[in-house]
Length: 137
Image 1 (cartoon, helix red, strand yellow):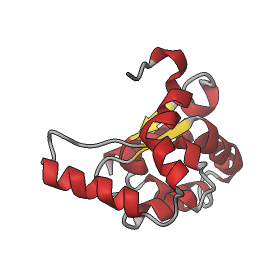
Image 2 (cartoon, rainbow, N blue to C red):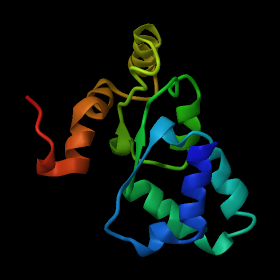
Image 3 (tube, one colour):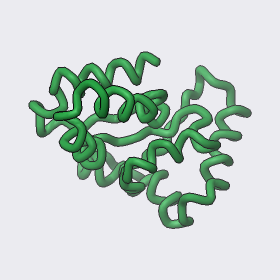
């Protein structure tokens, strides 16, 4: 819930709107955040809805740490978040290697991504986000 609350506060206070050169990486594909978008922005802050979605699609990057590809990812992608903004992440070493491996396998088995999109979330999407600041060997 902390992730959802933090990013909803950044949206409602218009921080994401005012700092246009800032990109955000949301852990756990936003946690409960995708479920809160319509609930908060379509009912209380309607004037921010479309502009916020545009930012979520362009300057938000969604890290896959924890078991997010079983069902949670579908809620995020329903907002037309580009699959090019998905990133692979883990909670290792805080979550043991067996659970981390199961999370990875769930991503590889996820039918909503092509093989190329899966490969991209493992490396190419990071290159898009970080450009020449990140070097892969």
